[in-house]
Image (cartoon, rainbow, N blue to C red; front, side):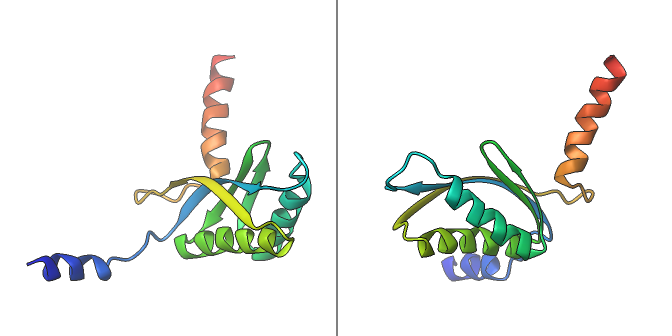
Length: 118
């Protein structure tokens, strides 16, 4: 019985698209600033071909589930390659199945509502 339940989930696909808001935190660096590490991650994201938006407390990246998770893992590896031995990330991930919606679409929807009230 347990094997049947287990095999049911092994074939479950990941969502087609997602957005992830993540904040990568280098731990144990000599400086309180993390600007160099953030710049390294932004270079990686630029080369990834995925849509992304940096903000003051992290980055939102959009694409297929597998591509988004891969690039976040690569961001960890890029920061480790700079000599940081410990990296923590906090992340929020969203998916939808009823329509395609980008992070910019979500922001625009709220801005449109605010403009109507003005």
